[in-house]
Figure (tube, rainbow, N blue to C red):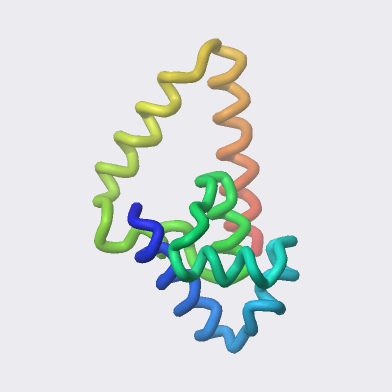
Length: 108
């Protein structure tokens, strides 16, 4: 995903909640400068940071990908990454993590 587009979506969601960059930064354990750099596309996010950001902004994770991927594309990408895991133990851990994320999101 384009860093600028992702930054725009973060900013829009933050502003929709009425959060300042400082307030949002506190929610995601970052400083205001990092938030500004995210929003301007100057600092790239690690994909593993997106769930925390989505939760802080009260948006579904797919919010960041709207118009970018179909659900089939996302399924294919997830499956591809799953098959890259080096062992059955790593794959089981990935499944366990997905269950934890799903349960946490469903029980909000």
